Image (cartoon, rainbow, N blue to C red; front, side, top):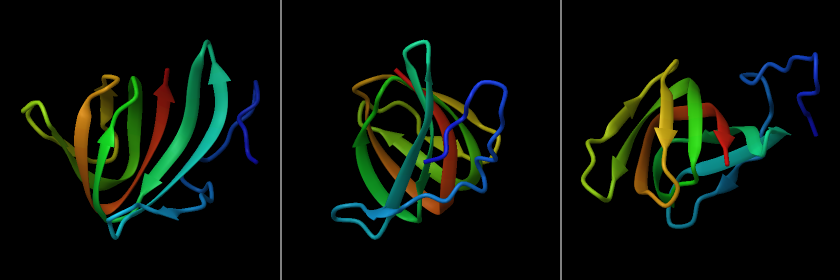
Length: 110
């Protein structure tokens, strides 16, 4: 298991993730927890093209690669994600992720 230790670096774009099928979808997802800091989990998450409903954790993430749209059940305007985007999601938010190009992000979740 790769972890980020104090005073070290890890290339998140090169990290190999084990991808698992998403139920009722053609997509697959993988996650790798890197470390914990101040009560936050920090990790790398990836989803291949497809559609997946989700209930979000309290999270901030940075998109490293790929493309997706996140739609919100409460009618909030959808987000179109691309590399370099920084996103904040609130715990309990119901979403639908539509990934058109394998999406990889680094996340901080509480």
